[in-house]
Length: 139
Image (tube, rainbow, N blue to C red; front, side, top):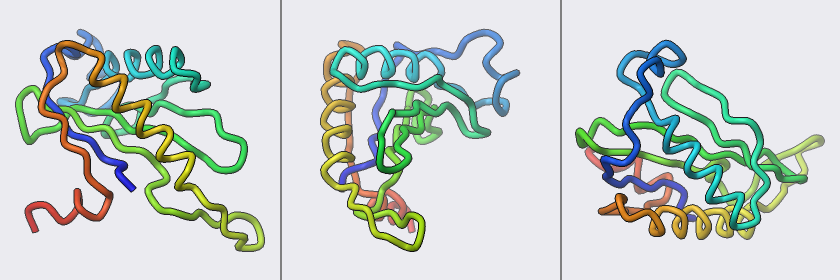
């Protein structure tokens, strides 16, 4: 499944105080806000954004398994960003090790994220990859 997208844009600079909310040099709140708004317009139900050490989380309401998008700047480029969808596997295990398929829901979210990014005139050079492809780069 395509779950990782890197791209370039000058449209989502850090807020002045953003480094106080996450680690220095990390940002992505403007992009997370943009995605939350655009995905909401595309029918996704969005939870409250929150921070992690590496960037921002856009929670997506989903009844059967946890679903979210990680968003942050990407050091590969001075104007680079990375978004990744979790889960990135085709199944998750729940109580009593029951396997729950994720592919259909994750692929729907991926299409919505792609459409939202393509709709922004300041976004360029989108490159989608699977989790495995993204983590294999440079090794």
